[in-house]
Image: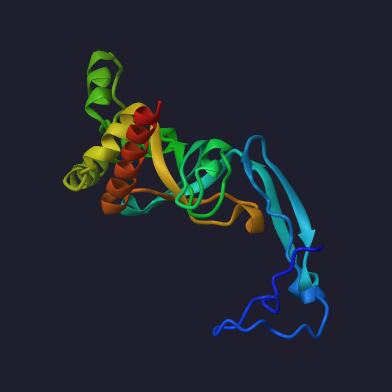
Length: 211
């Protein structure tokens, strides 16, 4: 039996079984799930209705992620899947789907922050910078004024700061890897980050009790 998206086989709202009066139709078809995994990029094209094309990502290892509060987007490496509200099996198998919480490499965002604000992103980085004896680049007075103005607003969430120190950021996938062939998303911040950090901690405690 082929995969179908029709609802003819479903019972009605009152519980009555609907009459069977036709076979499955081509426009009701469904396809096998992509089950996109972490790995070297592998994307297949699928010819779909209307002669259009879908991009079925089978493996991905990079994506474009937005840092919303700083209005910046960078391409970065995907490290691992850490949480999925729908199914823990998708976490164990590192399956990339929309809405999955993953860890990404913080390096591109750290480099941008340090060049934009001309200061280290974490206290650990500040200590390393003072220890290193490197000559500072010469900056014009105009650029120095711009950087001084930027530094007034250079505040960072303590939860994010600790992640930058570890070199990994929590992010959410907002694209559909099995449809668009991309795993793009955004960095978790504020209340949303607090929520998922709480979920991850409670999950680890459960595993510790069960062990």
